[in-house]
Amino acid sequence: MKNGWLVNEIDRVTREVFTTMLGMDVAMGEAEVERDVPGPTDGVVALVGLTGAWVGIGSLACSAATACRLSSRLLMTEIAAVNDEVLDAVAELANMIVGGFKTGAEQRFGPMGLSIPSVVYGHNFTTRTKGTSEWTRIPFRCEDGKFDVHICLRPGDAPPKGDGQARVSRLQSVMARDAHPDFV
Amino acid sequence: MALDVLIVDDSAAIRKILQRVLRQTDLPVGNVYEASNGVEALASLEQHNVHLVLSDINMPEMDGLELLRRLRSSDEWKSLPVIMITTEGGKTRVLEAAKLGATGYVRKPFTADQIKEKLTGLY
Image (cartoon, rainbow over all chains, first blue to last red; front, side):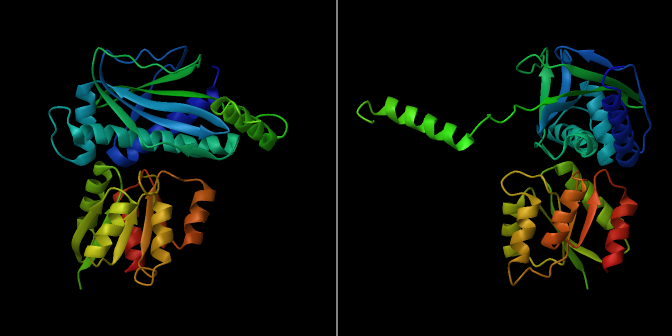
């Protein structure tokens, strides 16, 4: 399948995170390439940004019930309903999965940066990214339920051609002229 | 002598896990303080004397490498053991932390045994 290396890498890091931090095996399902990420109708989505020569987003999405079970296992405490602890735990799982993916991706694409995770919880919502990016959705199943890892990755915007400093100076001149009509 | 520790991570889950792991070691762990970023960590260090810092790298306000840089440039904290615990696993980041004076480096995800091993090696 297209993006085979990406799928294999996500499978590897997800297994590592789940076996190491949760003591649990995971089974990967059939990965798919999607145009937009529809998102769950309700549940928890944790998003982590990637930047560098290649840019993108990684996310971990699951139902509220699965999020509670995963968090209970991670924190070794019973959590019955989504609360701040659950959101933080899911965010950290996403952070470790996307962070592990980043380390592998850097060997292909050069240095990359990782954002601080954001997490969304609610009902009847969807997620979108700006532009026409492709997402790879990798479904997983574990003892605590199902979850999806999504990755969107594309080359970053190229720097301007020619003399970058000259372009900045010209832009500054235009801005100054527009702000002060008497400026020459 | 009790070992007082400062845990610095923007994830409450990781702070909780590390608290648990610290209590599971054979070390005489005393007070364990928490901070969610480098700014809070420096404020905590002004208030409490600790013997060890466990710090993430990617955090808002002030990241772990800047925290490390400030600790190593201060007379009071330049010898304070600092172990980085982070998703940043690339060689560049590891070398950067080493150059700045990190005492050790543990990559997330981590097992309790990996943390214990790092600490036992220090004390």
